[in-house]
Image (cartoon, rainbow, N blue to C red):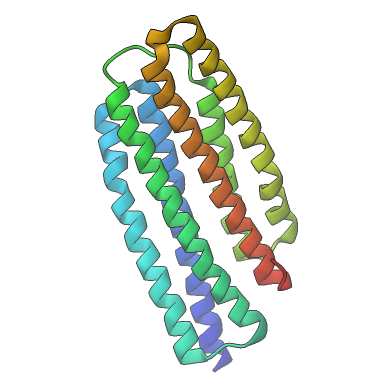
Length: 212
């Protein structure tokens, strides 16, 4: 009985890794399309969200099977409950990557007001947070989960820097306002991705310790 349960838990870990990989690709596609003003890649990234949604359903079904067939208690129940919470945040990250690409399509018509180095850094940091939060769950690694949470401060600082710079550009020339607002919205989406990755890490801590 326990061997079958452990096999299903292993499958759950594998599917979460797969979903994390899909999200990593979604973020990378979104930032690549944005920086290069590549409408085709942006549209590809928008469509990619469907794969993430399907993976969420697959994991949800696996979790429900574990709950109904195995009737887990204590720590095992926490692991499955945490996984169900995690995939909700992961699905939202996929939505936000798609939202970034939708704005990218709109922005592709004219040159950027500034280099997008802060947004590229936000993409890099949030990708790291997503991947490490899933790894923390799979490896039951508390230190890694706390490391993910600490990285949210970096993302918040980058968002603040972007906001300050874009406000300055609007003050210098009101015609910069429309594009600056779109870029600020993209930065906000990256900041939200960081928040969702933090939520995932907090659910990992709950799964391991029972405290949230």
